[in-house]
Length: 372
Image (cartoon, rainbow, N blue to C red; front, side):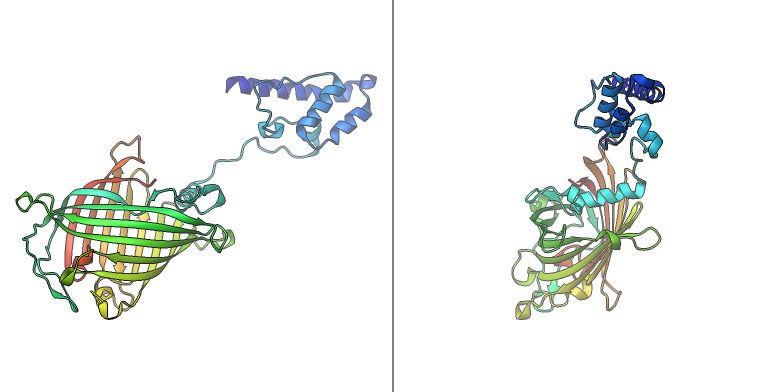
């Protein structure tokens, strides 16, 4: 770096001497030669022209020949006199621009962020919560169409909660500029890990495949008000089921539209769902009354920590639904993208499909992997 800097200083000194020589050389230098050099548009060629006309040679050792001379801040005195000098480097982007770049990288919104198709990335948080406690265990799950299924086991209030969530882009540039189609899969389990007397059974597992069409917001439409920016719109098709049969069976299909906005360290995502009709085979016809058909998630990234609160409700009436808090902090402060401590608090209906109409409050602590 010091060597390159000294090269630049020597180059500037030579360029200044060229300007002085151009004014004082007299008959030793033909004015027509200097005029032709001044008309040369390319900086590197113009400098070479002055070198040839004045009998000087600029030492370019240590400078990448692919980098234009102007990019290194090396300009002839003649050109500097004819037009304003531009800074050698652009100023660093502001905090809002940096966070917008991170948001764009997550969903590959711009052409510079595209990574191609079928590259596996995380979707929702991937976590293991070995310490998970619930205020109320649903020992008799029921639905209007399947009746009640008394549990054969006396489940405990202490669980382990596990979630695996991945996504991949399957089509790039679909229908609209920079719009992509993604496929995601999320699996969430409640495991009676601490109940060794009953062989530590899995109490429930929910399976959620999902198709997501991501549409970046055109640049002219992105600015909103008070510093908020509309980053993208998502259209999705989601299936969710628990793989059970009889009175324990739960499943439903939904479509949704989502909008993502952000301002500084705060981001908001609003999703509105529409359930698809399952006809006479509906396991849980009243699930939307409990879980809701709208979701508002607010994420805050003040530094190394991350915090998110998610509110799920029904648009027609806000009496049920749920609220969830998620907090993370890196295990190693020097590696914030590695393992992170994770705390989750849930209160309301639908922590699992089996408990869609059962109200409870739960607290879990463990570890999560950051986004990749």
